Image 1 (spheres, rainbow, N blue to C red):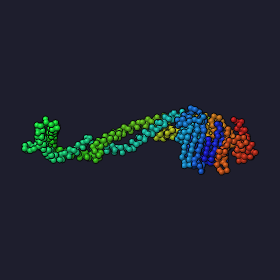
Image 2: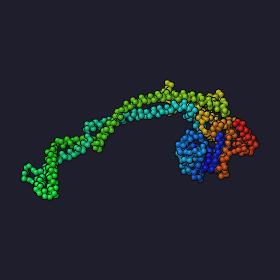
Image 3: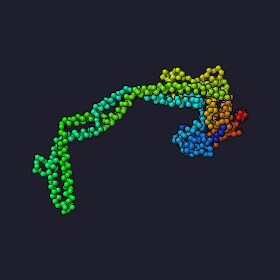
Image 4: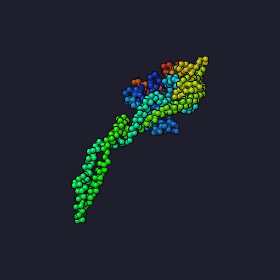
Length: 572
């Protein structure tokens, strides 16, 4: 990795061994920045506070060796990344304003892509992870991870059924809780639909009735006008001597007919007069029919106005016109059908809920059985690991229990509380020595014992669900003496099958490393390129002496350092 302007590090290159790399240095020298840098490369949260004071941005670049066809490579290539001679190049930039950018294989990618790759590339463990191991849900997750498909398969089915049960329960509660409101809504809809059904409005009826009311209200004037117009066109029988338009046009046509053969233009005019005469006759006939058909009956006008009033009453409540009222009625009828179906829906949901609860009970029992079986193997494997970590008499076990709850699901004939991961409470117990009762590790383990339990758990995982790289940030805190030597020896053994990086203060651990890196500050308080260096030979002895006694030149410390190195080499 190359690290620039991150925390106390100005510009430094960290060269990690394929096996076991120990990172050492004085307190505050910047060792933890190695962990922070790797976290950024793996999609960790960016923080402007990480940027070195005075710098515009912090940059971390890493080169990770991968194998073609690995799921990591497949996902990276899906994101557009390209391999560089069998390696995947990752970079992360954090600006002083807190903005973050990520690049994978030469392509800009969302930070989330890096996080997706993290789980398959590196397992990072620090002192906060020790505290996490004290939480019951983390202990259950650890057991489930160890159990593999034996738990994962029924857990997936359980989770799906649990989600469906939650959805069904929410819908059922909503229908039951809102039953009164929904009943009131149904009553209002029925009243409106009954009112509309009593009137039986027809589409466009309001427009037609308005026109008819206008006509009936002015029937006398319309009749007089039609009669007068008819008389003007066709004559008045009561006045035979009167002159009408039809007679005049007919006279004009006759006058032209006598001479039309002498001039084509005059002949055309005669034809047009003939057409006018026909049109006048048609209009006169329609006027006569209109006058005869015009209904001036006051009773009909009263009926029309009464019908219009009924329609107006509907449009005041249900829509701006009759068409809108009819639309409201159609939508309300559908809604009423839905509301009237509540009782049926309640019965359906209740039956589905009961069936899902029974199904959950069966799946929960399968989960409990699988966890119980895996717990015995997991505990035995961790106990065996603790024996190699200077805890030969310690015993690890799991307590798997359920809490009775009248509202829970039935498992093994009794109702128990349930959640998204089943009904089990899983707790890791430790008996540190013979005769000691098993106690929760939160209460029965010291800091050093907890460190070793966590390391043992991770070593067991390495045999069943390995990742290429393990990073331990001072997980040896609270450990010393023989236990520290055993931790170093166990980490060295883990490094035979995976890359192991350890940030440590313990010389007993560092001595077992294939490569030891020293992080040291310059006089101005920064870590430069030369501030992270590989220690070999005399330099490594001096650093181990400092870690042992705080005095690089102490003959006793040097002798002890050389002895540690010799022990580690003999154990390799």
